[in-house]
Image (cartoon, rainbow, N blue to C red; front, top):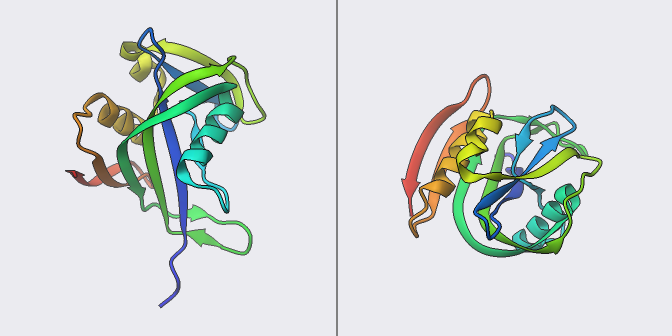
Amino acid sequence: MQMPVHIVAAGGFVENDKGEILLVKTRRDGHWVFPGGQVEVGENLIDGLRREVKEESGIDVKVSHLVGVFSNRAPYEGHSGVKIVPTKVMFDFVCEPIGGELTTSDETSESCWISKEQVLDMVSAPALRTRYQAYLDYNGSVHYMDYITKPKFELKFKKNI
């Protein structure tokens, strides 16, 4: 059996005291997303998330609680000698802004605060919309979902744990 290879990522639903959500627009494809990304070697989930939010938006955050764990089993192109990465595992957390100023980065062309009700008007990717809905539906139980994004989005399994 080949040793499994996974990408581990953390995403943040950053909500300010006005009830607005932080979104960033990616330079890669021009889509609006929640800040977050891959956890680097030697980094834990919380530190990785704080770093990603700061890099992508300029905002410093305090990570509050886990709302969901998501497995995307659609294969991705690898790097560093790995040809295909079979699964991406994402941990989504609620975050509180504690400083910094909105800015952009090499990865983002825009960043903004948007009302909770308008987020789904801006976020188009089905997987991100599903993860945002899990955030909205959070009631103290962590959501677990398994899906694929290629050739099209398909939710395979869903459970609260």
